[in-house]
Length: 275
Length: 255
Image 1: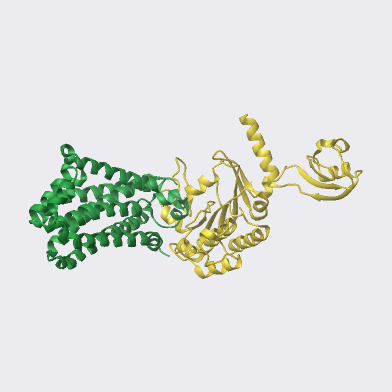
Image 2: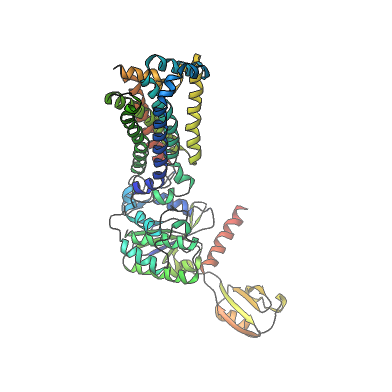
């Protein structure tokens, strides 16, 4: 797999797929058994130290030096990079409402996640490697973090992120790699990956409906209960809408063509093959 | 916040406690000397084990210097120095593994060699500095009990004891580099030392005990001008070998 410079590349897979292990190999925390990792032309195994000067890394693990204050941890995290920007880091802590003078041990899980992201940005390294950057963030913080990540890419940085949050991944990433048991299952630009993914509509009815009341023409598949239902379809959106037109709908929303559908499809197939 | 400061922050209080206890134990022992000297026959009857009785004999024969050697180096520095080495060095690598901070630390652009050497030098300094500080205190306090000590004897003995402690520090660092638990590294050090002390108390096998290399006769030799170069060289050699092993293990470890 290749990660293009100046883009956000997503790294997706179920628990145990090897995402975090691969990221640890990238930053020299784990030594790979085989294979090659090259960062800006540098061998990540033989020139690990040089590679790490080019990477601002935010691990998934939020256990940090708990006796340090946030600003001390930020300073410690970035000071060995070639051109760290502590002032920017402190400003970001302020923007994300992380108390700079509070001990890390007293911060919430979400605050620590923000602190990790901030130090990756403030390292000023050309590449940011983020392991689960959205985990434990509230919706408002996610919006801010997504904005920050877009700003960094606009400024010429490259972001390689693993995530279980496929909605954020789809919004942010131009390319996504799906991993399974340490191997690449699917890799490509998001719009190409989504080609052929079944459509999905969220339907709210005016009165409670039973499964038997709902049409199954053209392979429509319904899940839900009472007035809230979701329908998946392989046919075109127009055909699906035609089948629904006679139903007592209060509202309808297009939820289709999502990475989550591709995820389900890919890993259900894989599990089927394994079983 | 530098790597050294980050490490020292946790180590500082242990260092302070260690130096205060060592200093207090030494001052108390020196001020007790006149009583001890006057009641030596009665005290000697209470001492168990042949090995410890031989220590008493040396004091009866040679007086203040072997008494100080037992109190300061054989007992004080080895006991409290051992505890300090266990506390200060067992976490050199294992604490990050234990507390799950290794991934954060090692993903910084800083080499593992630098991490280990920085912490090893810091821990070794914190264990050794009090040996010199308290030994020099002994020179100043001894006139209070009508005794005098030569600077050269005290400094050479302190250097010899420091080499012994440096070996223990490095042994602990090596175990720490292999371990996922700080406690385990400390317990292994203490276990090894207790075993050696048990050997020392058994006359038939005391020659294989590490304590034989720091007992009172060695310090009496140093005072007599017979420096234990070979033993000191073995301490230094073992230190270098164990440090190289620690560096090798740490550089290959996955976290």
